[in-house]
Image (cartoon, rainbow, N blue to C red; front, top):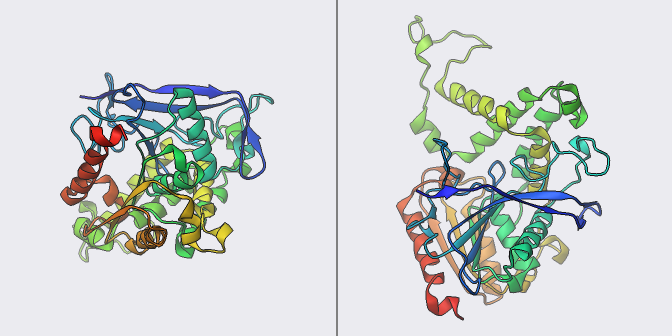
Length: 382
């Protein structure tokens, strides 16, 4: 069993952000798995999605049910094999799982950042990750791997630091968000900021948490992560047992939870509101919205990706309607326009966006084969 050890590193030098602001005296939480080889050429950086963290794989000593969020993918003998690769998971700046974020204290004022935490972007996260790698003495990565928002970070790595990586693995992601995706994010944000307990983002000072807004935000998000087929198969129109004895099968109430899917979404929302920070949710969804590497090139993705030099693997899932295969194919086309080395797998899986976290054998096979090829001695020495 892989035992994970949380680590942290503090950076005193200011990090210039895309917004024009800067941040200093910040910390990044991270974990590593496997062993860095002598020439430091087998490192794989894993970038996380919205509500994940640096705890990518393994378990914490003495803690049951503490598996990392991608534990099925990363570890000894797994597709990303830590017997051969040195894997690094980093918690993004502004998150609520250890790295400096809105709930932490500003080093100068001594007050909690709250709503005053600076806006961060995907590009800012990549720059912060590069600083951490510098401190670890890792100049060139074997690969940068990420799913969903993590895939956007992997894509951004190829443009910001093209000479520091040999492979980019982008799973269930997109080169930017569609208007529909931005709309879902905005509805979720409005649920949070209109919660009476939000207090303009300074709810910490009032000793409250905007749980109602967080619950709704999570419920909205969770709907978009699942496919219609999975929802129907898992829940259908099933009623909760508590209402099955009534004559009609319904309470005809505007307040009660009657359907299983309602109960499931409320459970997910309640759980999320207990551990996630409201300001972090606003920050991260905005970073999602802002990401658009083609924008400086008049929307021409081929021109934007001309800077990328590494090899690519892109993976998409047929029932993922939030980050549809069409979006991955846009990236593939842009890379082929630049004659880049790119592999693409479109997996016919029923699970929707969440498929990138699950154990589909075809998906796992693609990942295993790709990472095994990059770990071969001939390439590592190249």
